[in-house]
Image 1 (cartoon, rainbow, N blue to C red):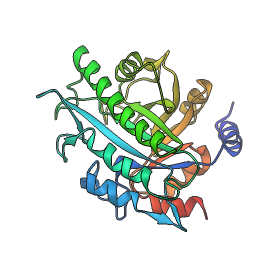
Image 2: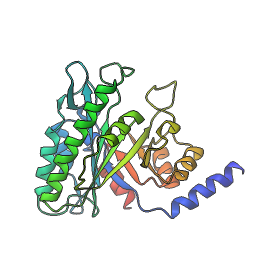
Image 3: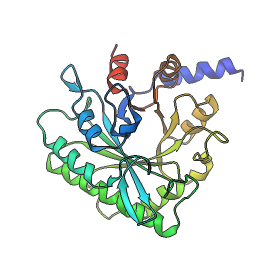
Image 4: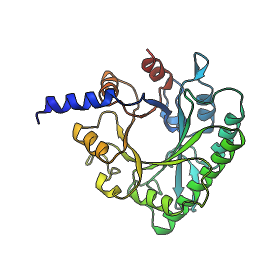
Length: 274
């Protein structure tokens, strides 16, 4: 099949897909984007206040958990160079948000994505051992339970997404699944900038056997063949972005990702609703 024919097939398939949902990347999507505020309580509160035409600008928010090996502590943090807050602290902010009157998302369902960070120190090659995998999974389910309790208490339609660059982390979370799940749970693999530019991304085949609902790509690093591979798995395309460019919008129009993680939620909402 010629490349032009493949592009046409991808475009036609995208036309039949549901609209993209906007997810507040790293709980920090007030503009201008400032990555120094990723995964901070102040940025989370400011982001949750964003509205457009009387509705929240996004459909969900992403919270990061980081397991710090030095003292076996689970944090709400992007890495060890940023604020390091106890992992459960943002769930209190989310509970307050769920309790407010009116809609909590742009659509009917609100998504809380939890990215489990794959390294356990400042060195990104320092990955979890077996005990740390189990501890991080326990932390993830504690975050889930707090979010689920708040969603049920306030009669909110909320879905949790666990996501990671590391398939072992997702397997550990699945192995620790509690008996009762008050709100639905989905799983996502993250595919970032490829090696040798970055060492976090794992081969998609490493996730074999996991019930992936999504595979998430960087907006500038997705190929037609990857799109086809993900769709053959029955998963949806998700995308994360930093500063939007003309290429970003072209990729969204071509692939119609189900989830878009952005630090520019207001900009992206206005573009999607144009």
